[in-house]
Length: 223
Image (cartoon, rainbow, N blue to C red; front, top):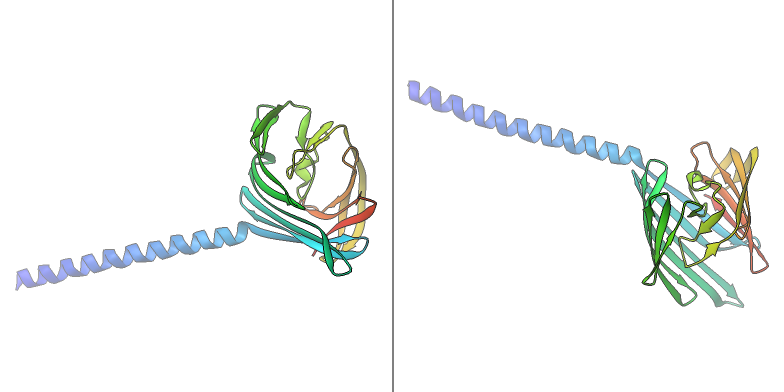
């Protein structure tokens, strides 16, 4: 009888341990899923050329890793006359961009790019050609306000372009309306070789970017 009771007892203990392991596994899984959901963010932009929709950009933020995809297609009389696709994966450490891998097809011209933080500057490899850039260089501003550093020279994250010089003005706060809504936005303006007007929300995320390219007015507007 004692052996039967002992055997029954240990079977119950083993079942309890198994149940407890399953319980904590579920708790950890749900907690991780909730954390991932809480930290994930997606920004969507429409791209306009002289008021006409020509493409889209999507920024997917997951912790310190950010994926940016962009596609532009310009047509004339229903024929595509220009096409550009771009995809990159950024790695951030706090407010610093420390690593970037990108693939761009600029109307048939391919660019395979890697950008790595290198001391106070960056090392950039484009189509197998590597160059080092000092502390006066930084990637040009885009979706993240943190890239608007005021450095006098800029690096493209899409091609082998170098922008020299680059100036930066802070123009204060303005109320702007984009498809995503109406926001109080910080207005920045870059000049020189990289001329852009950029508006950022209170989280430092891009709301609107405007510039002129090939005699056309280009707009990136948050949806």
